Length: 288
Image (cartoon, rainbow, N blue to C red; front, side, top):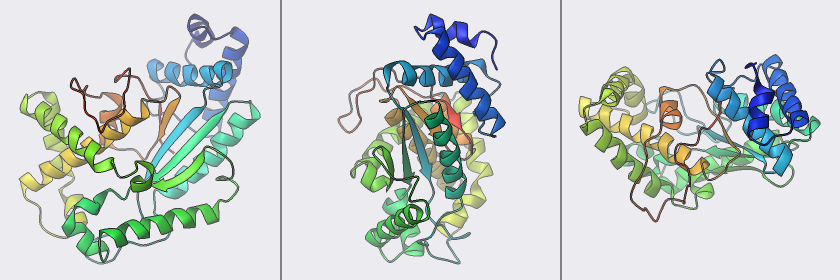
């Protein structure tokens, strides 16, 4: 636990008694193997503590955002999209059960949104491999959401505890937001900075993943395009979460989390994006 955490919270207008409770919660999280990504980073820990402290003093709930994958086959060339529970979902459900139970014990208000990423409906070649149509792809993901709810009815009982597909949650705006961020990512690649080297290397390392996804051999340009796409998706999600001062992200470990931790900023107004007062607001990331 970072030294002086209660003192830090006092400087942020969080009373010492509340700060002590927050410290207890974070200790309990550690003991229950609920780690923060980069948990040795004082800035991460302080931001998580401030989110918890604000929840206790202002009743602004901690809002967990948990994007998860659909029920993918191991390889798009040898199977179709399932309607069961994909591999990334059980750890998230286990985390939410433990974390929200603990927050309830300490009187910390919370919400959570589990979002099934039916984001590939704009990739015709992927849809052709995994489903009969884009609508069928979306329906399969909806069935996965229903299956998850059926297996954990107590978890999703009550207001502010939701599971939905991206299409439902973002009300059809997801690809518009993603496209905005893809352009931002491309502009930053063109600057020839360290970021360009990072993304080029990531594209090379994930060539096999992209080929399993598309069902064909991918060229260097194909790999770069996929890397840009995925990085932009994390940017879009991070930007969306920053509407909520109490946001925390629950996600499998990924190099793309850099987009949430070190985001680019958008200077021009984009009608498809929400208004965010602080585009660099730090979001605690939990790897279940």
